[in-house]
Amino acid sequence: MGFDVVLTADSTLMSDYHHNEFLGFGTCAPPNFIPDQLFKWLFFPPIKEEDEVPAAAPYGLRKIEAQLLSEGFNVRTVSPNHLKNHVAEAKVLGIHVMDPFGLGPASSTLAFILKKEPFLAQYFRRLLSQPAVRKAKENGLKIVVGGPGVWQFQYRQRFVDRYGIDCIVAGEAEKVVGKIFKAAIEGQVLPKYYEASIGESPKLDEIPEIVNPSINGLVEIGRGCCRGCQFCSVTLRPLRWYSLEKVLREIDVNMKVGGIEGTTLHAEDVMLYGSKNTSPNGERLIKLHEAVVKKCRGVTWSHCSLAAVAAEPKLFSKTAEIIRQKQPWWGVEIGIETGSPRLIRKIMHVKAHPFKLEEWPQVVRTGMGLMHDNKLVPAGTLIVGTPEETEEDLIKTMELMDDLKDIRSLIVPLFFVPMGRLKHEDWFKGTQVTELHRELLIKCLQHDYYWIHQLIDMSLGESWQAKVLVPFYRLFASIAKYKARQSGISLTSD
Image (tube, rainbow, N blue to C red; front, side, top):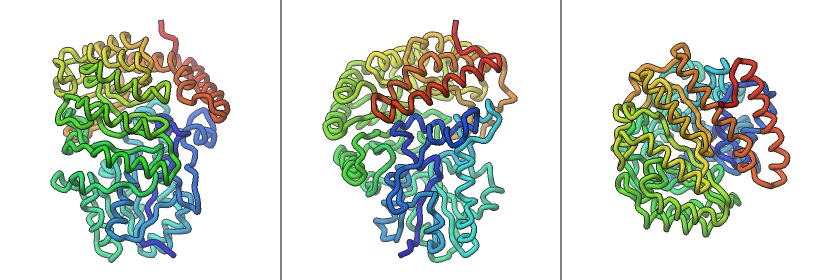
């Protein structure tokens, strides 16, 4: 039996990244000195499948799948490698995107450095270029695209027209996706771009629970953010926290249906779970982690703020103690962004709260120091080229980097991309890189290379799979160091 609606994502998203979410950042890189197939095996191997159905899929795609199922749609999520067996009978193809053209901060930065198109952009184009998809399109298939990366289509209108994308859905889509897919099935003309308004953001009881497993056991614990950073679109959404029961039910889906024993707790700031503002709710945070750790084999976080960690060191340490009952370490993504209090005041005025804006560099040092002591390994981002950035701002960021050299972490500089309230600003382009920018990039590379071998060993553990993979990652790091030296860049700091 055919399905009216087929959902999928490209191969860079339909992977569990060897059960290590941070390896997924490898998809942001362009083809390089490692053969493409080996690079894919190292960083985004295909997800396991059964009857052409992926064992797990991106969490956002699972939410749309759950919403459509709850509304009675005949829908199936399939692997991108098997679309040819499904799209001929389908009426709508729904595609989840994260960074479809490589315009995101990490991808655009690496594309500038290596002068090539990132893997994730290549694989998205390959998905839409499949002969079966093109033929189905000619026969009336509607293509609907959604996900965090849809903002990029406004810069690629020719691509939209060339590949026949019928509708691009932006924002939280639970309350609107049903009517869009219904209209598509009925052959109605769809809006080319539909942005769900803040008023269409679903309430907690309107957000469906996933019915099939998500990649690496990722589950949301909340949506929205109260920090108000102007370069981020998430801060435009209302802050909502799932109940503990809702979180545990989704974990059960991953464990019982998918056999996924660990979980990734997803929120813009896990430390603020259950809070109404930037002050952590210790009781709810501890209760959440006690329940999750009791149920799961391992826990990791998607994001947290340095300010929340620095403001509540005892609460953070207690939470870390709970998590480390079953694992030696865990990971998280953090936003360092800058070492300049002036830039913090200008475009991130709530980021340091409850501390003073002028204290931001010390907040970073304190927060990352606590993470180091409690075995939380952060992947931190710096923004290069924010509007009105000065040389003094860059110098302060480099001074901060010097202070962080003994903190176990990865720190990645990212070119400014106009998003959120700054979406009308100019992009930071590679042609604007100054000598100071170059010095900052080199400092980050030196920091990361200093820690990379320890992080490789920590990330992959002692499993048989690790014994196979670790030598390849070590080789990759060594070749990268050699290539950098050939380009006149020393990865050994003074």
